[in-house]
Amino acid sequence: MYRYSIETRVLENNHEVILGNRRNGEWIKTTKEILEFIDEYMKCSAQELNDFFESFSEEDKIYLLSLIEILKKIDIIVAIDDLRDYRVDIDDVLITLTERCNLTCKHCSMNATSIKNDDKLSYEDIIRIIDQLKELEVKKVILTGGEPMVRNDFFKIIKYIKENTQLSIGVMTNATLINKDNIDELVKYSDSLDISIDGVDEETCSVIRGKGVFNRVISVVKMLKNRGYENIALSMVETPNNSRFVKKFYELCKELAIIPAVRKFEYIGRAVENKEFLNKVYSEDVTLTLRSGEFENDNDGEKQLSKHNMPRIKMGRCGALRKSLSINHNGTILPCSLLNKEEDSLGNVLDTELRNLFVTQNLTDLGSYKKLDRLEALPNQECSTCNVRYFCLTCPHITELVSDGLETKNSICNGRKDYLEELVWG
Image (cartoon, one colour):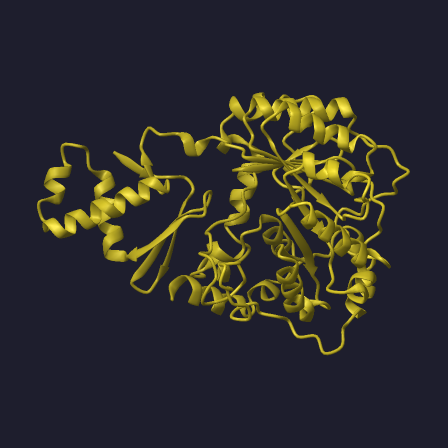
């Protein structure tokens, strides 16, 4: 007999339904009538299946069995005694090596501190974490900060990871400390870079990150490309006053042949004290950009956001505590670096073995998991009946801000619902 995975979610739209797995993001659309048959099928024992299919034509039987096999393959349906969906299976871990940074960006969510401060995690602490991730067969580690490269032992750390583990190494950086003397070592020991820039030229970048940053970043990107380093993402935080530059940002990334990443702005960290300033910069004639249908796929299949050509959208929230977790600058283990309240803590890596935490415990017993489940219940009744809700509020942190009244639902929903409905339901 079978059951629905604890990660399975159902959306309805008139006579159609969507069955999806919020952990892996896969989903399939069918009808309510077919869903009723699937429900009946799962109640049947092996002996009862023959009776169940007696009323079906051969063609309908083949169709239903094919559909059920797909649902099993994407873990929407699982065997009743298969408990894999109750366990944590971490693929990637983000480690904040330091809270220090050489820049003082106006919108820094971490409120990064001066480079003169001391780091909480020693080199030995970090290596002990890495060895545990290796034992747990984690696939990727992402090193971030602050600015991770302010650490004097940064290259010693990535060299150890590369030479002693099979972990893929990602680095989130402002790129201003990358130069001709260390770039070859970075290329050798890292696998991907996520570079923050928050602008499309010197003027738009400097008001957030400081003078000269834009040109230094572009220069670094070109140096990396010249060395054959291709796995580069350039990120921009979309604020209320720079939304009109998003299209230019995508054009810049296309010109540089790198991956664009646009992130939502939040008034947390240093952004709180700079709120008035951030709202004034480029405030004239600002039009919020709905990025649907503005960018087309080019001939080589480069992924651009387009309503008609966009890659298949995933269902469900991010992988926090399902496929990923975060370790902050003092060793606190969190589902995500943005979910960093005391109630989110899973312990501290300095006195908690990761194996004990994630191998011996049930996923659903963890307090943080229960909180994520509560957040997925969505902050109000209007959202709870929305027919695209599992494709929309996919970030638990954003959901928490809405729930706490620090973010408005309308700022998330306006324009987005119509876009998602067309994308998902057609």
